[in-house]
Structures are given as C-alpha cells and as structure tokens.
Length: 259
Ligand SMILES: [Zn+2]
Image (cartoon, rainbow, N blue to C red; front, side, top):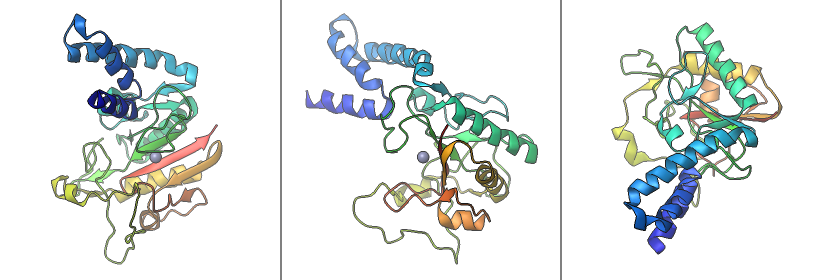
C-alpha cells in the first residue's frame, strides 16, 4: 500500500494526472494487466486535460518542431509528462522571441523546458515551486558543439536542465558556498556524462536582450545567473537573480509575467 501511495504522489508531482491514472488502474486491475490499464488511463486523462486546458486559460506548446517562429519543447518528454502548458499571452511572447531569433540568426530554433501543467492554478510543477499557473516558462539556452558549431534545437543535456554554462576564470558563481536545504542542485556527478558543449553567446545574448527590452504584462521577470547576464552584456530592471535556494539558472532563462 505504501508503495502505491508513493507511486501516486510521485506521478502526481511529475505529471499532474498520473496519480489518478495509477489509482484507476488499481481499482480496475482485475480486468487486465496493471501497466496496460495504467497507460490507457494515463493517455486518456492526458488527452482529456489537453482539451480541458483552455478552460484553465492554458494552451499547449508544440511537442515537435513547428518551424523557427514557434517555441516547441526541447524534448517531447515534456509533453508526455503534461509539462508544456502556458497561457496564450505567454505563448505569444515566447513565439515573438523565437521569431526575433529567426530574424537575427535565420533558422535558429528557440526551445522550451518546463512550463506548467494543463489544469488548476496553484498546482506547482515540482521541483519548480512557482510554475503553477501557465504564466512561467523556462527557455533553453543556445549551444555550440566542441568545434564551435551552433546545434539546432539541442542543448548540452538532452532535457536542457543540468547542463550548465559554468563560469569562466574571473567570473563569480553566486551561492558557491550555499549549504543546507536548497533546490540549487549542482549535479556534479552528472557533468562528465553530458555533451562537451559551450554556450552560444551570440544567440543566448540576443534572446535575453530581446526579452529584457520587450517587457509585457505586469510583474515581468527574467531569471538568469548574474555572471551570465554580465557576460552577455544585458542589464535590465527585469533581469533578476532567483536567490540561492532556487534552481541554478545557467542552464535556462526563466520568464514570468501576469497578463
Ligand atoms: Zn522557471
């Protein structure tokens, strides 16, 4: 029973509807194989949530490439986990930065990481405590391979997160001596397994500059590590530091505003 309780909590935290699918599979398991039932319920609930999302004021970001003027998710896994929902105002804003990037660097793709779940304001998308209403979106940074060639629609890590830009000599990483309970994960053990890529500074700087120069809605905020904002030469009242207890922001740019 504890095992099922844990699975329900974990799946709810990861996918919003997964815990309900698990529970329904448990209740109906005399009718078939548990995992087949779970997958069937999960798929049905995810599709249902997709169609119900507009009632919660949310729309899905594309799961696959939709051309250079639309922000799609970096990895279809974000769609499989129902983590690709934003308000239509956020989608418009994200597509505007993608279009700008395509104008500046033709063909460039702008990619999203975690957005929000499809339903219910106030339901956080763990581990992000604030992604709970479709008004927050994490955008991937832009990357070059080891030879310095821009990598279309790809990032240092396959999910975008945890493949960090890392400070250069002379740059200071904030919170380097942070201790205690924190969501600021460095994941040092993972770094040797990631791609040996470097930040595409021209593209990442252009995207951050456009975002900073085009505030929209109210309470417009962009989070990125301070050393990166400085390196990219972007200063703005909208570019903030998220603090030492939140996730590192040298693998993505967090965008948020209220319409
Ligand atoms: Zn975020």
